[in-house]
Amino acid sequence: MSLENDLADFTPTESTYLTIGVFDGVHLGHKALLSELITRAKQKGMQSGVITFKQHPRRVINPCNELQFLTNTQLKIKLIKDEGVDFVIPLTFTTEIAAISASDFISLLQKKLRMQGLIVGPDFALGNARKGDISFLQNLAKSMNFEFSTIPPVKNSIGTVSSTSIRNALAAGDMEKAYHLLGRYFSIEGEVIQGTGTGKKIGFPTANLYVDAEQALPLEGIYATRTGFDGKSYDSVTFIGKRATFGDTRRTIETHLIDYNEDLYHKNLKIDIIYRLRSEIRFDTADQLAKQIGRDAIAAKNYLNNLDGK
Image (cartoon, rainbow, N blue to C red; front, side, top):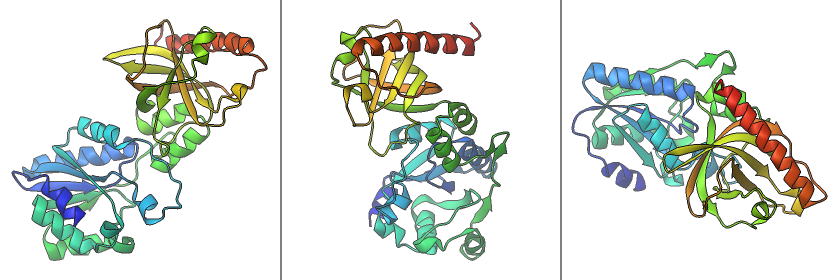
């Protein structure tokens, strides 16, 4: 079984306290869960561990589901580890795993990971047909001798924190709301790929970013952003859309680093998307576009300076 193979890659040196989930976005709700996990593990003298998934289970169970992820696997693991857990195990979610019963799944965790405690979020369900809900796991914990608990939903002034509410904020281009749900700026990462060179020709060189087609993106438009690479961060203005001025219908992410003119080809960039400046506009000429990008760069710089209190 692929599940056993994935679990076999990690051999804990002591008993473990675990949590399980997709953790898409690693938002404030996830962070509250991870904090409680770490606290309980330390109190019990155990290692804290996170079981997560490389694919979203809903897309595997229903391939027609077009749900897009907020964080790719690499970034998700980094964000989870940054919270201070002892280990993270990303599982390859398959239809075979989906068919495993909740009790068999728990049995594997006890056998392979020495699990003695499990804490989950409020809407958690495990196993075939999601039969391993909170009530089921409470009873299972008694019969299989492990500690089990849940945490309540996390709410703030924005509302209940969830991956769905963050996706809705992105769809509306509301980056401030996304920030208050995530506890950080929404970001995308990817490699700079060869573009058309149009930006450079009109005086505003841009880095074209490759991201997975399943990556969730904000509403199409122009954004004030910060772009990081090689340990440094630069103010930038980023376009997310389909380059209507040039008749391109492909999803495109282009970022112009303000006051930076070096080659970025093949570099891996992390773009923090901070504020939506405007919607996409189709211009009749490249000259009109160049003038607007100039205005956008000034607006982005001013916004970011005000954000920093400069």
